Image (tube, rainbow, N blue to C red):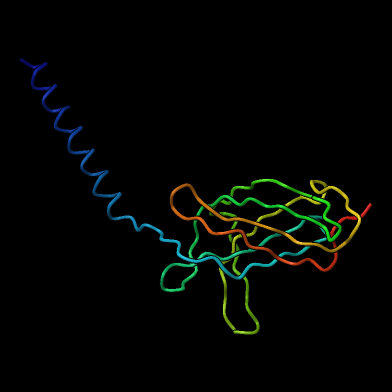
Length: 154
């Protein structure tokens, strides 16, 4: 008889806990990513890496933080492919950038690529092509940033 009572109590506890997790998941806000914007690319000679920045915004135009995958391809002006890869962005990869022109702040993802990961090309300028997506949550068409110097040259 004690085993039956314990089994009933354990079963009731399992049902209660599973309904709590459903309730908690419904209370946690779901981040809706609607647009991609504010992208840029720069080289930092110390500590020697390239950074691709971009912002994700919700339907109200507010910056949001979301995990994402980024396909990146860097090509110099002579059509040499210097880099081709996919980098995952986590919530810790976001930085707050001050916008001096609009006197505000932007929350941007920063994707870092070590300069040693790039092949050397024949032109210091070129184009960075990138596509941002996350499984079935969101996907944006390929975008690009023009680079006027700082790409590695043979």
